[in-house]
Every structure is written in C-alpha cells, then in structure tokens.
Image (cartoon, rainbow, N blue to C red):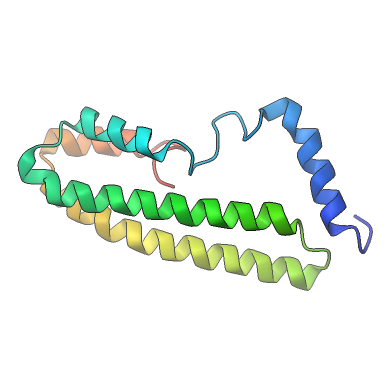
Length: 136
C-alpha cells in the first residue's frame, strides 16, 4: 500500500471481500444478533430459576462485550486502516487491550455461571461455546 493511502486501501480491500462474504462475512459480525444467541443458549441449557442470577450476569456480559465490539468495529470502519506502521501497531495494541478487558469480564461471568450449572449443562455449554460463535 502506498504511503498516504491508508483509508483508500482499506476501502478497496473491503469492496473486494464484500461479494465473497456478504455484508459482514459468512457468519456475520460477532456483535450481531447477541440477543438471539443469549436466548438460544438459555433455552438449550434449560436455565432454572435457581441459576437465574448467574445466567443474568453472564447475559449482561455478553451484551456489554457485543456493545464494545460494535464500537470498536464502527471506529475502525470510520477511521480506516492506519497508513504507517507505528499507527497500525498502536491500533492493534488498542484493539488487543479492549479484547483483553472483554476476556477478563467474560471469564468472571463464565466461571460463576459454570459453577451454577449441572454436569449435563456444563457438557452442553462446553460444546456450544467451543466454536467460533461461542465467545465474543
């Protein structure tokens, strides 16, 4: 990519990928349809009233993570790809810092929920959360 063409290069790359992957990729963006994922997980796990507090904390964490990811995505889409190596490194570091914060939040709520689940629910949870759409 030529110097000074950071935003143009990102735009062209997105245009080339669009026909292959649709608007947001084959599976969509991880922050999309979070309420549907939450409802699916709750139904599949058969969350009981006794598990509601741990479940609600987990669901709120998923929502907060989705909001943070959408904000990060929107910011990247608005500002485009940084033109210089130092700027790209700064952007990557900021993205990783956000992702680490999200992981720390998620880890706490997952551990609390996991402790409240039955053995069968844990097995189901492990399977559902192992794929690319499991954790955000």
